[in-house]
Image (cartoon, rainbow, N blue to C red; front, side, top):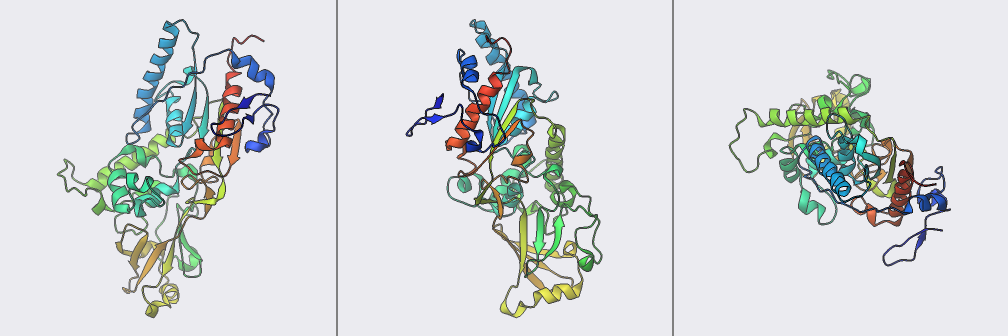
Length: 402
């Protein structure tokens, strides 16, 4: 039996062991002969850093050149090296898909296979949440990305890469919701039924397109469910050579969604993926705002909203604090709070399983638990499933002696 040696722990058997142990109950066991077949080969590891602030389409072109040069270097030193195996984490999975896209990296002919860990395949609602209310949790993430909506917006609004983490149409409908005091959903976006509110509360409701770009991201600033607060785009007050910063940001968001539209079906033929579907590590698969009265005198706000028969699309945004609380008003000027609820979906704390990570098209999915997003490769299950994938991928190469 072949083993994986884990620093600080006992060897872990990886052959003739059911992959169910690592989260893939229907996958074939890894056999000793498969390991032996590909063992007489160098497997050097090269880290390919990239600027996460720039578009993954740009990073793909730059990284493709580096990988092709690396292959040529090995060949120049007498090694048989025609293809590489890509191992990715998080956004790196999106970059890898752009790498093999013919209009971006064009590297598919040099890639033998790909192993993805915790990829936000079609984005994550956590990106929307963070723009509105910052990053939750412990250091260093909040300190680096921003612990308020003001901080995060200043980064996301001015950089193409982070905007490529927003949910795409493939993420699904109805992931942004507003509920009344009793937990009843009053509206949800992107809509899948033409309007965003049920008929009983849809007086004068605007028509919705069913895609997040128009239904959510590029809504006018006064729409309370929109993405970008224009007052948070340019905190330094710099003079910009544009007529409208909001228009510029909306164009960047549209470009990010267009990028995803190009790669939405781009997956390598030999793809393996692992991700966490952990209910103990709740994640924003959906983003839910819930009505709260502003004071004890407003405890009947539910009744007032019902009596007004006013679609949530018509509520007016009065203010937002950048930490999850919005103040909105009805036509009659009655005000109430919309409070962002904690995450409720399974995942890794950043990427939800069902909404995004599970949607990668792969030969084998390893569905796991027990780790957070940033620390996925510290988990034994991820290390073993990566090794399993690399051996399976290596076995697809031509020229091995049998």
